[in-house]
Amino acid sequence: MTRVREWGLQDRPLNTVHFESPSHTGTLLCGLNTLRSKGLLLDVTLVAEGEAFQAHRVVLASCSDYFRAMFTDAMRESRQSEICLNGVTAAGMRLLLDYAYTSRLALNLANIQDVLSAASHVQVVAVVEACSSYLQTQLDLENCVDIATIAETYSLSQLRRRVYRFMSSHLREFSRTQDFQRLSPMQLEYLLGCDFPVDCPEAEVLRIVLRWLSTLPAPTTADSCVQQRLPYAQRILRRVHFTEITPWDLDTVLSHSHMDQTLYRQVLAETCRQNRPRTLKLPIPSSTSLINSRGMELAVVKVGGFGIAGITNEITYFLPSVSKWRHLTSIPHVEQCNYGTAVLDNELYVVGGCFNQSLQENIHPFGFRYSPRYNKWTTMAPMQRERCRFSLNVVCGRLYAIGGASEVDDPDDEEEVSACECYDPQTDSWESIRPLPGHRSQHAGAAMPGGSLYISGGLDRDLVLSSMLCYDAVTDVWQQRAPMLTPRADHVMLVLGERLYVCGGWFEDADTGNRVLCETIDVYDVSANTWDVVTTVPTPRYHAGIVGVGSKIYFIGGFHSDAMFDRATAAIECYDLETDTWTTGEKYPQDIWEHTCVTLYIPRCRDDMEVMATNDSRV
Image (cartoon, rainbow, N blue to C red):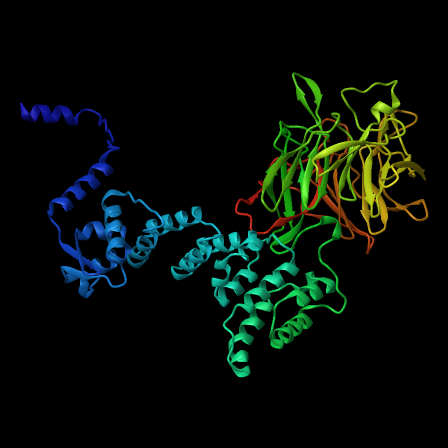
C-alpha cells in the first residue's frame, strides 16, 4: 500500500504552495525576549557603568555591526563571556537592548543622549537614524546649540545640516538669545560659511558677529589679545559678505558697535579691504527687495500654462548652478489661466484669472502670494472685481491691475470695462485708480523707476491695438505715448536698463483677418518717446514665456501656428542685447505654451527639488 501511494503521488503534477506567516517576525522577537526575561540560553554579559546585562550573542550580532564583527572575527572578546563597554551608560544600554529584543524604542529629551551614545558605540544604524530624526523634530532656539554639538560629536551630517539651516533662517532672533553666545568660534565660522538663507540684511549679520566677538573673555595683555582674539576675528569676519553692505550701513554698524579694542577695528578694516571691490556694486537688483542673497540664487521661473496633458498649475524653475528644470510648487487653486503674475519683495503674486466649470469660463478676483524662502503660499485680499487677460505690475511697492476682461463687461460702458486698481501689501487691500481710457485686454505692462507704468497694445474687443499709454502713479493720470511700430496682442514688455522692449505677440492681417506673428523685438526710448527695431526673432511663436535676465531676453516654449498638429514647442532661445546675438539653449523638458515667466531668488538648499522628466514624445 505504501509503494502504491508513493507511486501515485509521484505521477501527479506538483502543486507548490509558498507559505509566509506575517506574524513570524513578531513571534520570533517575542520568543527571544521571553528567553531573555527567563534567563534561558543567555551566552554573553555586557557591562556598562558597572551594571550587567545578559543577552544572546546571535541577537546582538544580528542588529549591531559592532557585535557582529566582535563575535564572528578572531577577536579576544569573541571567546569572553563578559564584555565591558566603556563610554556607554547603563541607561543607554538598557534601552538599546529593549529595542534589540522588541523593535520598540521610546525616545525623549531625557534619554536621547544615552541612547544615541550607546547606538553609535555599538553601531546600531537604525537607532542612530531614529535619534537624528527625533532631534530634528525637537529643534528650537533654546536647544539648537546643544543639538549642533551632538550632531558634530556623533558625525550626524544630515542633522548638522538641518540645525545650521534652522539657525540661519532664525538668525536675527537666535542672535538675541544667551545660547547664541555659547557657539564656539568654529561653530560660528561654520554657520556664517553655510550656504543657507538668513532672515536679516548683511549689515545686521556683521553687527551680530561683532556682538559675539565682544563677548569673548577679556584679554589681560595686548599680547594675549592678539593670541586669543585675532585668529577668531580674522576667520569669522572673512565669512561676512562685505560686498553686500553699503558704506553708509558699514559706518552705522561701526559707530554703534560696543567694540572697546582698536584691534577689532583694524581686523574689520583689513577684512573689508580684502573683500570689497574698488567700486561698490550690489549683486542684488534693488527692485527685488531681497533681504539677503545668502543661500539664494536668481532663477528663471515658469508659471502655469498649457501642455500636452492640458492646463497646469505647476510652477517650475531653472537655476544656472544646477542647469536643470525642477519642480518648485503649484498654484493653490483649481487649474486656471490668464491670470496676472508679478514679483514684489522676492515673492510671487498670482492674481485673478479664469477656469472652466461645466464647459463655461469663470473669471475670479482671488490672489495668492508665494514665498520661495519659506516655500509657502498665503492668500491675499481679492480684487474689487474679477478679471482675466489683464496686466499686473509693481509700481513703487504696490501691485497695479490694469484692464482685462470681467464677468461684468458692458460693451456700452467704456469706463467700467477699463477699471483699474492697486494693491497695498502693507494693508492687504485694493483701491480703485483712474480707469484706463478705452477698453483693453491681452495687453502688456511694464513699470519704470519713479512711478511710471506703461501699457502697450492689446485688444479693444476685436481690434488689435498699437497704442502706448503711460500712467503716473503719483498724479493718477494717464497719458498717450508714441504708438508701437506694429499692433500687438498677447505680448510681453520688459524693462532692461532705461528702455522698454516689446517681444512676441500677434496682429491681424488686414486682408485675410488671419493672425500674424510679430517677428521683431522693438525698443522704446522713454526719454525720446521713440520706437526702433532691435532684432528679428529666429523662431517666432505664439504665447511663449518671455523674461529678461540682466542684458538677455529668453523665449521659452510657445507654439508655431494655429494648426492643430503644429501647436507645441519646447524651444528656448536667448537674445543678448550687449552682443546682439541669438543662442539656442537646451529645450524645456515638456512642450508648453500660454505660461508666464518671471525671475525669483530661490534657495539653493531646497530638500524637495525634483528634476522634471522629459516628454519623450516631444519632437
